[in-house]
Amino acid sequence: MLLDPFEMFSLVLDKHTSEILHLTSETPLNATELSRLIGIPLAACYRRIRALREAGLLREDAKTMSEGGKSVSSYKSTVESAEVVLHNGRLRIQMTVDGEDSDDEIDFTTEASMLWWQRPSPDDDKKANRRK
Image 1 (cartoon, one colour):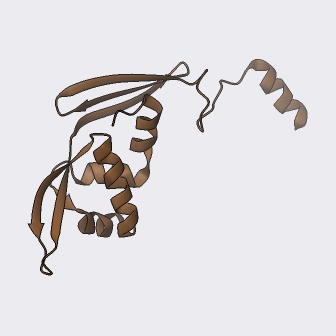
Image 2 (image 1 turned 90 degrees about the horizontal axis):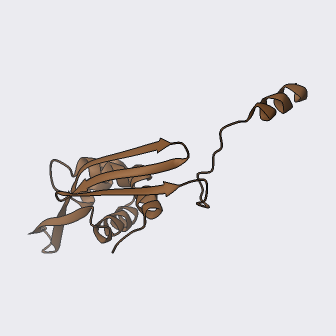
């Protein structure tokens, strides 16, 4: 599943999702281990694993059998590097995933989003001083 830049940004900005990527960058871990290490319910962990796998940021590394005879998958991050840069109202996400570089950009001056910001103008400073 190919995500647009804003969806990718939202996905990797999530605290627990980024923890999953960090924890699985060196050593493959299963959902139970990730859930315990991060401190989130197993169902929430599986939702994030599914989203990361669909985005191509996490892959199934191996399958083992649990003591109860169930198949247990371990997961490994495919993200080699990621950088988020905000400059002049433009957000750039630079990622290397499985050896491929992506360089997506969001223009927050036109993107309706939860992250809205604007550099204060001198008039804003005057208004703030009048309210004091």
